[in-house]
Length: 203
Image 1 (cartoon, rainbow, N blue to C red):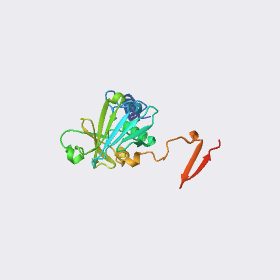
Image 2 (cartoon, rainbow, N blue to C red):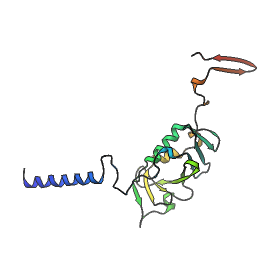
Image 3 (cartoon, helix red, strand yellow):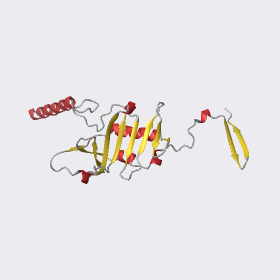
Image 4 (cartoon, rainbow, N blue to C red):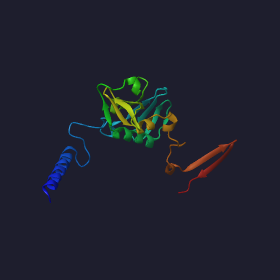
């Protein structure tokens, strides 16, 4: 092995050791830094969500004690808990691609981060305010949008969260006509034109 090869291996080893020191095996960022946009520990910390869009028609969602979600606005109905949980997972997993600060940062208007931006407001136990995430317009970076958590700096993040949140209220309602588990049903009665039919579910 030549001295040049030995030197090259030493440099590679040093760089790998530095990488392991800075990032642990799970890919955690250096101490004191976090690429997470929403500083909320777990999904269980979120008990209420309000999605406000530029076109109005705010959507308000409330988590029940059993973990299921209900819609309280624009109408009272069962929400699709799977979709709401997917939205929350996307929120908590959202990462900052780039922080936009200093000279050359586009204006809030150019980023779509004005008062008319799509926002997701979160509350916890006893109605405690957790914060609001504003989702802006697409950026020049492919598949990335502008966003801002609370009064922090504007950032770039992936667009998937906006695609989950920027939907009509019907898309977040429970599509099932009945909220009664089938295993709890014993008898079904159907009435039409004064005629009654009854069906017994045999188990």
